[in-house]
Image 1 (tube, rainbow, N blue to C red):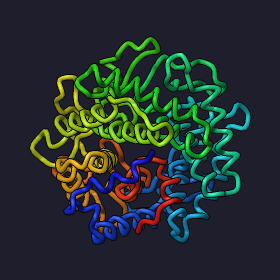
Image 2 (image 1 turned 120 degrees about the horizontal axis):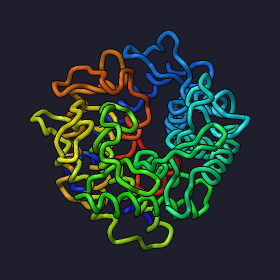
Image 3 (image 1 turned 60 degrees about the vertical axis):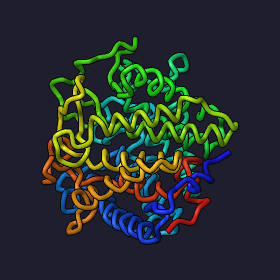
Length: 418
């Protein structure tokens, strides 16, 4: 069973049914791809400056390179010229200078090989490998095999049903930490691996991660998502209190991640339905509750539009800047719940968030989206100083017209969207 019938639940007036809306999203997606192509550099892809050029001293970044492989794979699967060579470039980089030939795994930057190996990075490498393999790019299957081996041998904790967090370069010195962020992106990677490798264990793992974090942890916290734990699963309430703008592990809670977990939960549900015809009954209610909490505590809490970066344990704004990815994941959660339920409240939010993105984040002069703005919509750099990469924004332009399962790349290959 798939959710291919879910568009039948859409109201006749839904933007998703309108050809003008489809064409607008397609145009935005093409602009993102054109802008992102400039991030190609020797050894992979680097972070672009606000003007869309690589700054002096830019280095190829492992996370960005893996994300670019995935994003340009989606473009290539849609038949957009220019994307395939960029996928090949990224795969070569991930099999070359960004790969640790001595110990296995990947570097975030090749110039700092002694930095810790994070599950967050490796989840994106696995996603990139799955996308390149589906596209049939040379080296894609090798990248996929290497990445799945690393996840299997080092990160996956069978007893806990989650991914371990990080290690030293030689896989010693496991970090005393369990984090929601790396496991969230590992859920997406596991869903893609399940579809591309056809190995059902990856879907089982995605379901176990979601059960732990969404049903158990967020369910015990009013469907808000605490992110930081030690290896004994003690909640670290003061973690990074002195680093409130950390880009991966900020203090407090991140409403944008509530949204992201919401639509990932729907995708796990759809994948289970597609495979077995059944899924746990808590998945849809929990997904709805997660997005409700994100909007209740994160959207315009200071009276100004947009979803804030973080909130504290009293659900008050802690870091008020509006990051691009937070809005992208929230609009995706809204449309996926709209497709899943047909409820008009999600159409309202889908339109509201896109209006905010269109009027505040899209940079019509220099390209792409502004990575971060303040409450008044002015360019900010408290958390993210460079220009947004493709991953979150581009997926937001294609997800509205695709089913919840299979994974985005396979759905794109099987569909014909504008």
